Picture 1: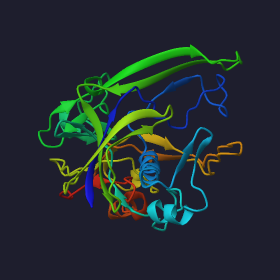
Picture 2 (picture 1 turned 90 degrees about the horizontal axis):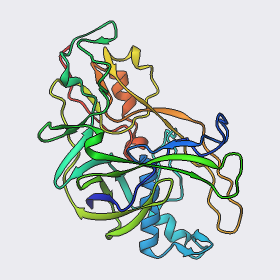
Picture 3 (picture 1 turned 135 degrees about the horizontal axis):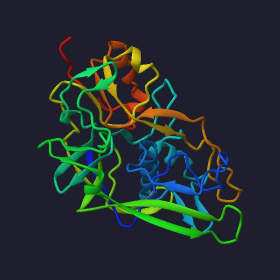
Picture 4 (picture 1 turned 180 degrees about the vertical axis):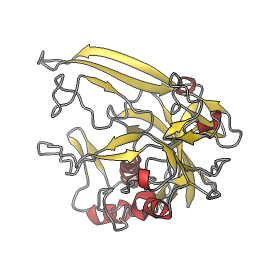
Length: 322
């Protein structure tokens, strides 16, 4: 079945990247300044869905000392959500059980859908020697969200409200001071994505993000897709994308931003000390990036089926005149 899933925050959220709290300048242990990303990672949404399916189906044991799948339910859990963690570098299509495909996360306000997109339309479409004509550096060209039906434009301040918190961790260690910036959504905005899944999920309250913030999950059947067509035919990333080619050699012009990506590689234990090991850091091209006249090789590189099935490498492109 195909569904529209919405996530409405019930409290401020902190969508982390690779920054964690630690001593100032200590790259190994992180930083005392942490700011939330605006969107959750697709892999985090996948993990949330897997956990919720196991919870609603009754195969996940939940007690004070932790959450786990006992040996009597391991096969059932594997059938429901697979036994693999998402590997962005995998060249093989991974199996996530009942989850067939997960779409890119976007924003909804009532029935209106908004995507992040570089505001190239405000300029004269003239670019020479890597420069965009009439570009104003005082204006953040990347801080732009577009209604896919009406082309209405909004900025972050129209959608996100920053919540700053400064504090002191208990214990008085050297790295006990911290400052973090979380977000919440304004004006009834919600996160949303399309999901193809063979398990019939029910509405629920879920946790997502570095602080385990609560969201109201609502799910309803839908045959829609996240479709957007740039009026100039430019390739637009609807999600973060794992591209392994040098883009300077494979498009005429591009306006992009990068975002770091790491994932936890070891399992969580209920009775053992959890030693979290991260994968090697890579960089993804951020959703909203625009590519002008991409090469066939770049288009082929984006067609990474394993990434696309969890919502990465989603894009829209119909081609341009050469």
